[in-house]
Amino acid sequence: MRIANLNGRLSVVRSLDGTDTAFDVHTASRGRFGSDPQAVYEDWDAFTAWASSADWTGGTPIDPGDLGSPAPRPRQVFAVGLNYRAHADESGYDAPDAEPPWFTKFASSITGPRGDIALPAGGHTDWEVELVAVIGRRVHRVRAEDALSHVAGYAVGQDISERVLQMAATPPQFSLGKSFPRFGPIGPWLVTLDDLDDPDDLELGCAVNGETVQSARTKELIFSVPSLISKLSSTLPLLPGDVVFTGTPSGVGLGRVPQRWLQPGDELVSWIEGIGEMRHRFVAG
Ligand code: ZN
Image: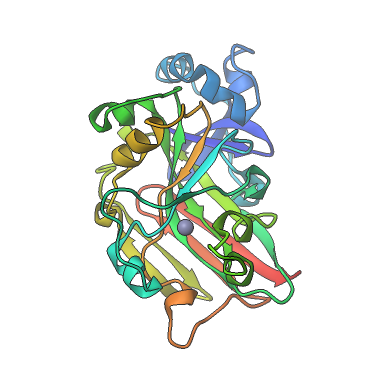
């Protein structure tokens, strides 16, 4: 199942004759479920049970420009650094073995899969395509083998990062440099894990102006999604609708020789196999 935020309303996306078609959940459920995309995770088990047998009529073809984040207002946003070996190498760090480095993207940075993103003046703004997991059921102290039952689904994420601010303090302040407005796009929708051929091995990548700059597979994650959730949940509870950015593969601008940063007018396309793609244009801030 695919869950979308269409003009701020919770929708289920189905393919009809090859066209992605949205069904408004509040209407289709006759008010049983509200229209707020963030609220559905509080009632996730009841929602998925209803959706699996709902009568889907009256859908409308999707205009991608109307899509927002499928988790627009998470209470907690977790992100992890250096979770692909080749990215740790290009960053000049040893790959983590026991514990990955955690940080947050502050929730006001979350945005949808389309539109413009302003480049901070004087900054060095970089791309980081990432698999994003959204929590569907509160989870605290869970074993890795049980972790995925608490995940609502996966989406494409970009951990947009302004490197000057990120590196301006000692130790680096990852969270602030990665939290300018719209620096946390998520989309194009949420895909439940039963809809993915192999949720543990998805090709992901991104391109700047048509040139592929990152391409990898999620099976290369050092800490898998179940491992990340198990580790986080050993410290604190993960709440319904929380977002986990799972780390970026190699190919970021920071790791290039010479280094490369996003420029006004650049178009960034980000994708994950079986989920979909996001498209953003960068403009002068
Ligand atoms: Zn990242």
